[in-house]
Length: 277
Image (cartoon, rainbow, N blue to C red; front, side):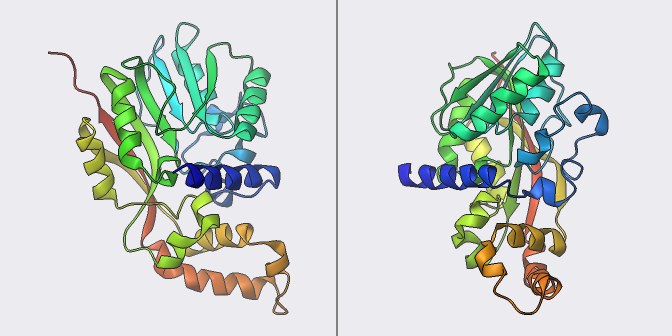
């Protein structure tokens, strides 16, 4: 677990340093992920450059002023800032991430935006540095699929939620994915290698004690989108060896991605903690 966390953390840090394109950026920055121009208009211009998400986890939420929102794997802080707008000055938003690089980026974006209702914590989502029964909403954007211990993550979510607290989690799911997708560390950092089936995701949420769990939205990726993610993550030293030209390499990857595109998609999961009797 410790070595796996270090591996994922290292790949994310490298992606940030080299400004590697993510699924979000590959599909038109935040547009495909469900972020509106109105939502992004008052945020730092470059905030989507390091947003490694697959869907706007706040799009179907009913976050209210004065509530407390927890973002698992907050990254550069895009969803933190949007949540801060919703909860207002009387609310609180907490971001948890395991990488110093992302936390530094989030801190800068928060400072540039002028919000005073956001706090950042370094930690793993399998062992959240959050008190029990203190959170109204848990959100997350394409992070939990990376964890090798998802059962522990869902248990922690259940622990920190207040009675009646809710979740909206955007994540990548998959069924019958080829072995080379699962084994690729690069694709793991691109939110594809650690996926589970949608039905298993829902079952694990239920086992953790959450109720009314369901999928409220799905997005399916085109082969060209998956191919672009792969191309942007392979080392330049390898991609430059081909004598065929970039367009030929791209067409090959698109053909390889066709069977994968039918087996990988992003889903938005809703659930809630039982209310007190």
